Amino acid sequence: MKCPFCGGESRVIESRPAADEEAVRRRRECLACGRRFTTMERVEVPPLIVVKKDGRRERFNRDKLLTGVLKACEKRPVPLEVIEKLADDIERDLRSSLDQEVPSVVIGERVMEKLRHIDGVAYVRFASVYREFKDINEFREQLEQLLTSR
Image 1 (tube, rainbow, N blue to C red):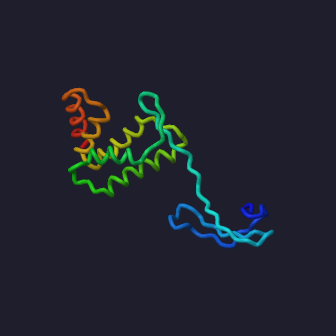
Image 2: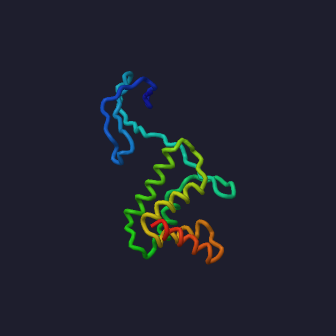
Image 3: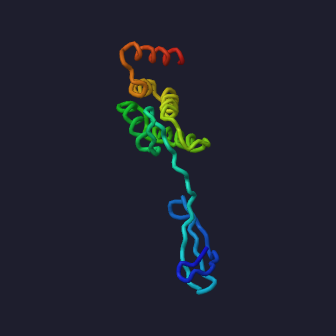
């Protein structure tokens, strides 16, 4: 790495994890001028793009995912830790796939699959909004599927 003061080459004196443990803090010394400086090294994560139903593209937003799941789980006995783990698992799965663009349908289906095993009422609430139920029959069909799968 080049020295920010003189442009000479530098060597690493010390390396350790940064406070957030998401980076490595390196203490360096310039071989030319002898000055010391600190650098931070982070993994560059490419953005995850969500392709909406209407074709629009936007960056993946974990907070948006959490908000939807929190609304579905409102007044239900689902601990916040479980909801956060659901969001973490989905984000990790999406980032581990080789695709940088993910259809919103894939995200919605994964949320429903996980909610189905966590809380039936939250699952039906989420499904009713996500699948845009038009009448009570669609709602009933979803409930029947949930009951037969248990």
